[in-house]
Length: 465
Image (cartoon, rainbow, N blue to C red; front, top):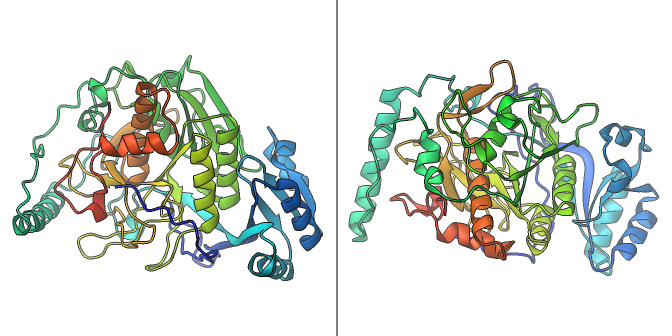
């Protein structure tokens, strides 16, 4: 079910311990894996000039509009050491300033006239994928599968708990397929979401994937309309990691790849590729917000983000990201993000990661091919935001990969997220007059109920129209 709209919150000061993505090394153990030393400032959209004037007067720094850094991420390095970069379409600034200046802005938020709405430390974020280092299954290489005995034991344990819970409440569980799926022509994830049966292709729908970029010369994307831009200083949009190419393939890979089974959902969606994570799989809130701002400016109906950072149990969501997500919905853009891979089920369940824990961002959990919750998938443990909204295939997912390999099979809520993004593009094509929150509601209403707690799978398994 959709998360509650909670807008009247005090600014959060989140200092998560971030964990890396499926194919990316984690930061060194002696590095600061939380804040970057910069700050995010939420401006008023109805009085932008007043907000900018107040920000300039309080900080004394130069103000640069994001349009001034277009098409050249290296320009940001040429800005003064203390400055603010403003993302106009979403009303947020990333500020480089001394800690004392941060205190002044914080005081202005608490005691001022509402010209400045919120301030938060900028966090580091990472590509979210399954990693052995955090106690979850390592990425599965093509042709392999997770240990059968482990998955069977996990599945049986979950099924027993579900059966008992359903019996207590006299609820009949819907049938769930347990047989092995033939993936000769179509991957199990595309089959489970019924994407292969849909008459929709995402044609005319703009879909943004914010990640590590895309292999722009990949033969499976030859002839596609693709807009690509890098928000990472010194790195082109070309994917030097693999995570982004894999996610783009799931969301919008071709209907007939040729030498491989079909693995993508919205084969005719218009792709906007924003590189917000570097080739090592790391980035920052500011880069992500820059990418969201770009997607909103380009009227993308969907933004897919398989990225984030870990939050501690009981930590609240980012006030600024929540407001950005609400502003994006008003502009007709749905933001979808990975719930995270920090759980070690059945022993422990971790809370949904930042920024997926924001109420207005669709948080996606991962299920395996038996439609059981993936052992690494985070859960909705925080009632005030932090819920899981929907689930999608996320274990042993085959998709595109940078050359020379071209295809790979890995696991994570990162893989589940683009399934939801691609299927949202199909719903957007099916309902051309429906955008923003109304589109989000249609997606959730059409999910397939699963005999699992909503804490783990939200409304259920995502389904194509």
